[in-house]
Image 1 (cartoon, helix red, strand yellow):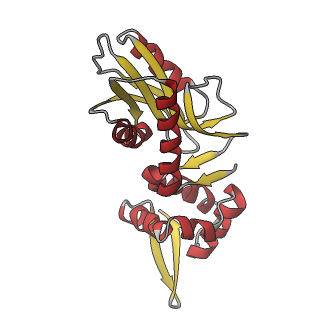
Image 2: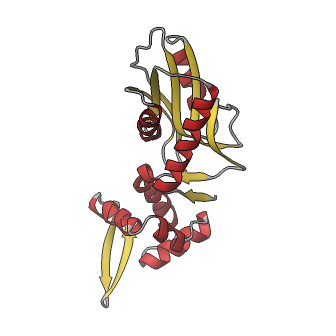
Image 3: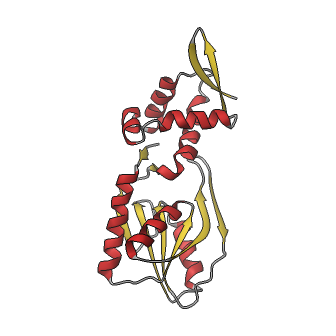
Length: 218
């Protein structure tokens, strides 16, 4: 499976593209509804770019980790007679955004949708999006890099017991096409930081043999 690493500069540019589309379209939302969790960051940035004060959250999760899928809904919003923009970081299948729109349309006056990345596998096309991705890719955002990289690391480490850091990076490159050099350039030090978090949480443990450091799943 192909994975794509993003960084803050790239995503800021996508937010600007979405904001420009909304302004050019003449749509003036009163409130932004951010789909938790990825939509929180997008919603905050778009609020600033569009000069809005109202940002609320709608708890819908469709994907949790690259190898687990589920749809959970937590509805706690009040949007009587408002123009609403629903935002998310990525639309992959379209199920989360479709469900969010269904919920918000029962409460609001005019509802539009937006995302930063739209994947060709989606059956739902939003009103506004930053970039279109051809074919399925697992996109790793800066705000969920620990969660997603941890899932990938656990997956490759099942193949044997002891791993050096470089062996883990090489296995992830082979399995998920994440170039370790590009990862270090776009997110310097984050890979080792993820390993530290996994060690702290007891997912992996560090082993030193003949002055050489290895990691293994616990």
